[in-house]
Image (cartoon, rainbow, N blue to C red; front, side, top):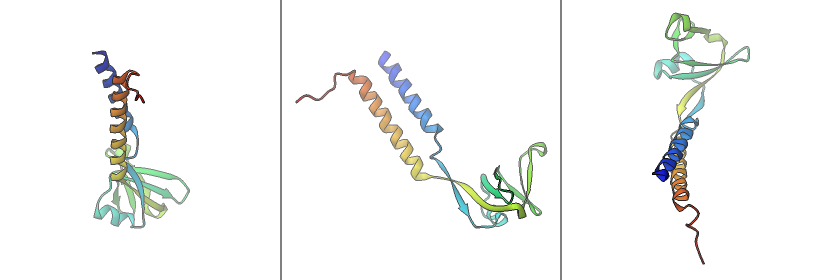
Length: 126
């Protein structure tokens, strides 16, 4: 029963670490104007570089007049003028990174179980 608990802890820790990593998404720069980008396929999250040098991340952006607006409640909304935006990046899923991350997690789980079950007695002899 102790082996099962230890192996379970190792598996949980590896899966938690894999979930915490950001290999599943990446930022992709785009030259598409923001109004067209939002009209085509509204992104869940965007990163904007502004003329004053600041970077802003917005969730679920919409276009209202000559501004980009984000936020569900009026008290939490944020409005930025489209003319203040110098660069746009969209958050996209990274399929290759995700597959690689979970493959690595799987290898680590198998290795941890193998090492735990051997208890030092699985060495190869000549």
